[in-house]
Each structure stands twice: as structure tokens, then as C-alpha cells.
Length: 105
Image (cartoon, rainbow, N blue to C red; front, side):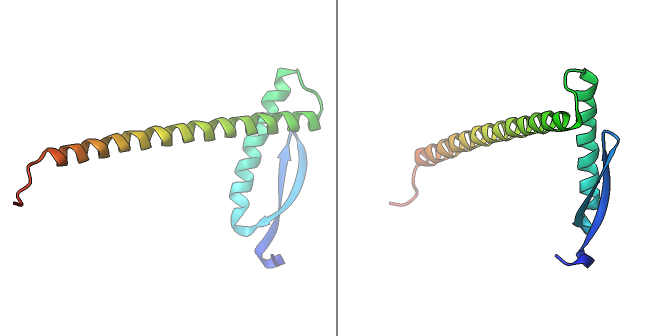
């Protein structure tokens, strides 16, 4: 990636600034992700159970990874259910077609 295609973006997580290079067209996504992560980290810090920026960041990452895996599992279950439903509809349509008398003799 050339310098013309990337830019440095600064983000704040728990009032600490971090700078990252990212593609010019990905800045908005990076900033939105940083805001979301910062919110999760603030929630963890407010609980008072976890101290230290590094531990809070790890806990936020684990929580987000868990949510992502749950979401994927729910999506997979939904797709499987839809496929079963479509299979049932296809079976019913084929059965109905077999019940229609043929015009060929």
C-alpha cells in the first residue's frame, strides 16, 4: 500500500490516544469501531471489577469476540431452519405435482 492510499488516524480509548495507518476510504469505519470499543471499555471500567487499560482492553475484546461467535451461531441456526423450511416446501410442491393427472397418454 503506498503512502497516497493510506493515512494516519488518531483514536482515543479511555482517554489515551493511539495512531493507526488505515486506507483513506476506511477512516469512518475505523473511527466508528473505535467509538464502539471505547464505549465497551468504559462500561467495563465503570463496573469497577477490572483495573488497568490493558486488562480492560482484553476483557472488552473477549466480550466482543463472544458476542460475534454467538451472532454467527444464531445466523447459522437461522439459515439451517430456512433451508429445512424451503426443503419442505419443495417436497410438498413435488408431491402436489405427482398428484396432478398427466395429460400425456
